[in-house]
Figure 1 (tube, rainbow, N blue to C red):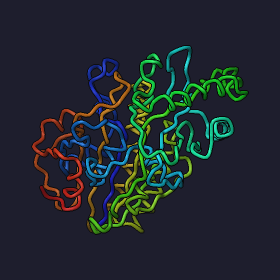
Figure 2 (figure 1 turned 120 degrees about the vertical axis):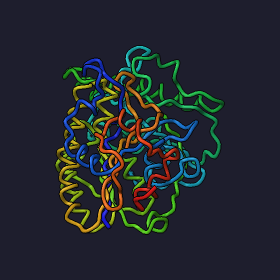
Figure 3 (figure 1 turned 60 degrees about the horizontal axis):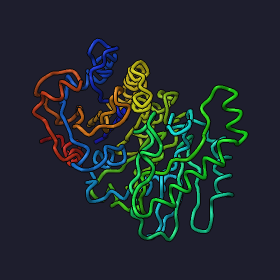
Amino acid sequence: MKYAIVIPDGMADYPCEELDGKTPLEAAFTPNMDALALKGRVGLVNTIPRGMYPGSDIAILSILGYDPKTYYPGRAGLEAESLGVALEDDDIAFRCNLVTVDEDRLLDYSAGHIGTKEASVLLDVLNAELGSDEIRFYVGVSYRHLMVWKRRRGMAISTVPPHDIMGERLKDHLPKGEDADDLVRIMLSSRELLERHEINTVRLDLGENPASMVWLWGEGRKASLPAFRERFGVSGAAISGVGLVKSLAKLIGWEVVDVPGATGYLDTDYAAKGRYACDALKSFDMVLVHVEAPDEASHEASVTEKVRAIEKVDKEVLGPVVSAIEGYDEYRVLVMPDHYTPTEERTHTSEPVPFLVSGKDVSVVRSIDFTEEAAKETDLVVSRGHELMEYFLRGQR
């Protein structure tokens, strides 16, 4: 049996005025998704347990079959794995975004999707000026980086993801809690160091958003997850341009397939992801392909780019994967977003998301297209997201 999972991150959305009341998924031309839905089943699944933040870390843990209430170590604790950063039990890691600010407002959570080469220079400055035996900054990809605070066993803080507060006042969203002062000091000090750096001077001259400070959030500790193969008896590989997904794959014992041109942004090489996924199916029982682009389009409030991203996922990722997997005697395909990212909200929300399953032993109950509204009308509802994997593997519910 071969299994393929395709996750267009944040694909689920609300009806949009620009699309005459349709959602981007409804407006997009998605013949491959619709063909799978017509011969499979469309359902609704709650990937975000009650009381937890609707982030990709929690949602994809659920999709992989791991209950976030039991296994979630914090976002940065997960992402450390992809950067090869070995955390000790008493270390705390933070996601460290390079962001653009102006006066007292956060303008851009990604500093214009700054390149990794430029970001690396700025992280070197932070390590030289703010780093110590306890504090260290680690370079990731583009605007996504990591800060580790060693030997900090307890830390009573509350942080906010920067993509949730674009256009809002900084002082309303800085870290809060008994131990927040140290984090706030680092963030404000980074602004003093970075705003006048020559890299940002050039970026401003070119009309690009500068990386004017760091935003610390997503605190987490050392992560440990039981092996997927031991739990489900299936080998796996993952393809993504995002460190979080790579970390999850490594932690559950999967192979991480690095794809040239996989950027984790709108300019990602969709076709390359499709090709590499088809090749990985030859060696592994299950292949997961994660595409960040629909989520990024939502954060930028670009309905047009979101529709385009969904169409490219359907044509250049899902299409080739379906053609390849249909060459095997037995197979199943799962397509779903991890969470809603409404373009009008520009952030994640926690309602249940649509999914479709097609393949061996998946019985057609009612032939419908793959849309948010169609999923809401189905009788296939998975209230605890981590149970979806069992249904996907066994094909019956």
